Image (tube, rainbow, N blue to C red):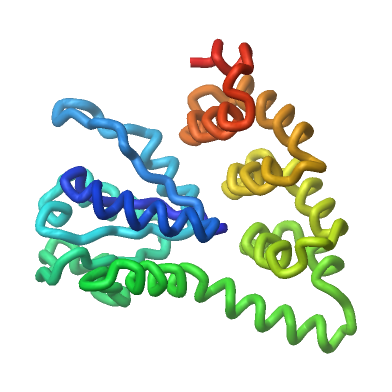
Length: 250
């Protein structure tokens, strides 16, 4: 549902992975770097692109992460790009001066002592702007006597379009017009930052799965090197692990 960049220290991976799994079960897409980074390596361009594409930057704060040079760099990029930041406290620590500028005005979420409750607070924070938009659109639709289907059909460039479509789809799973609108958007917006999230949605729909698979396969051929290339390939391998074309793409 939401494109989230996850910033964390490798030594906190166990708890962070648990949170990410819970978020993804709620259809919230998380970009998390699990590759090993050696101290001598150049910080990857892939990570910068992922931060720029994210709607929200979630930073997990602990004794380990506040000392991590990579976490500091990621936070600096998020601040420079104007990405919304959500600080999640893994433990009760003092925010270091080097992070206070970016985090001073952000509402912190405490993950302890109950992880599930903390995750619910993260989800609420992620969807705050979307819920406000939904209320405004509902008021507009009531005034105009029109429907969400019509609104989505003519407002494909809205910044929250993918999230709004997904929520309406969950609320009305039998609405074939909503599904058709989603597929058209997916087909026509392959450079959009929400395209991979829509690919996940389309691959779940039996009516459009084969079409979405073919489009994604073509996308892989044209976009090798894209920071979400491995994610897209992985999604297709889940559908067809024996695909010889996918196997040859390494």
